[in-house]
Amino acid sequence: MAEAGLLFKNQVKLLAQTFFIKDNKKELLLCAHKYDFDIHFFDQMSDFVTAVENASDQDLFVIDLDVLYNMQNDMQQQRRQTMFLSDLLQRLPGHHNYVYLQTVRQGERFLLQQKLVESNCLAYAEKPISNEVLVDKLFNLFGRHKRGETNVIVYLGEIVPLNTQLLAEHSVQLLHSQDARSLHVKVKEMQPDIVMIDQSHFLNTEALVRVLKKNIEFDQSREIIMLQQEANTVLARHALDSGFDEIIQKTDNDVLTRLLLNRIDKIRASKDLISRDRATGLLNKIGLQKKAQELIRRANREGKCLAYGILDIDKFKLINDTWGHYFGDIVIKRLSLVLSGLLGEHDLLSRFGGEEFVVIFWDCDREQGKLKLDAMREAFSNIIFETRPGENKQFTFSGGISDFPCCKTENDLFLQADAALYQAKQAGRNQVCLMQDLPEAGHKRWQY
Image (cartoon, rainbow, N blue to C red; front, side, top):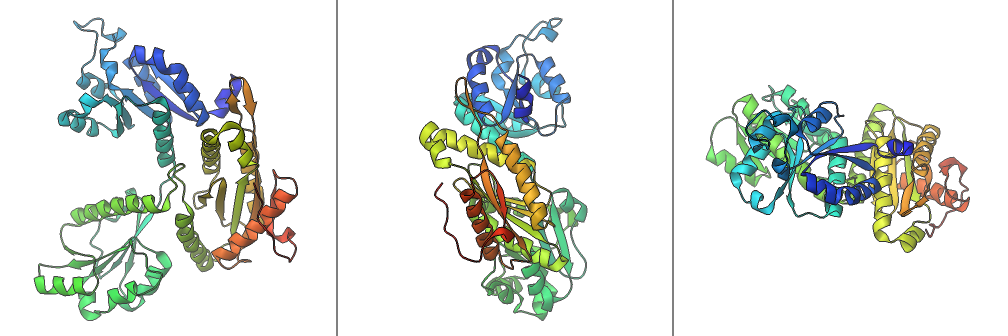
């Protein structure tokens, strides 16, 4: 078992009814281990609280509300030995969030739902829920846990009417501009989620919004808001006809900030549906294209280099044909966790399609990129997969690296890295090749 600690980087602490643990522990552990996390089971509240207090911020904490029926050893001095819900919630450490499991009947009680969401609730789920589904949902929560993204608001006006500290706490960057005629350039460079324009600038330059929206590269999910100093129906109607998505009246800075944060949350959720891979939580092909273009523009502005890597699991068709597509999905998800854990703060990672991933290393030349992708390859190849009881296998991937500024566009970066990947496959797999190793002639893609 010494190897288990190395294999399972993520941990779940589960407080549950004693009989649930007896009936489900073995199967739950088998499912969880396939997804690269371990589960620690508790039926005593005091033990669970101690474990939570000493846990990592990356751990997940799950509470089955049927634990209220358990006899609690530390309550022997009281007239009762079971807990009320209020006992449970009051004893939970307040610096962590929790996943609650409840019955359908419990889920129908609004006051109970209200009490849970007001008690550090990360998520809740209804039972019965199969072990496979529960483990898959917990895997997705681990992915959501790990990496946040910074959103951007551009404000065109004189004095910033927002709480900048509150924005920063929610990973929102505020860019202030006072020049209406350069606004379209700033929006193109920074790709903000929200553009807020003070009404005075609209009155001076009515074409502002049309200049932004007529750009063929304009992001349709971006909101353009006019900040109105006081109610004016005629002006509001004119602004909406000119292309503004919303009119907001000036109010307290803190209230206005919270209003924009709520809009940012909706934009994040909407973008995730479009730009995220449902199985791994990583960027998909659409999401990568937008983020890669932004990163290239930034690298160009700041004089930085980028290493662009494509990797593909070796003989993945054979994996699916031998052990089934369910097992193949597990291999993909485990690889996504390995790659995510080795990313830098400004790097990008995408599940580009099937068993193929793309990683972009920020401020990194091709040789450094090769070293980083090789480290990822080695980490993945060391993972032990249980294909059948008592039968373990290890798998590999091959990779290719190109770089910016040698390649100027995202398409060129992809084509050159893809050609290097083809060479790695042809040379025997389980290796990373550089763009500079390639002959002038074109290439064809590998089979699997």
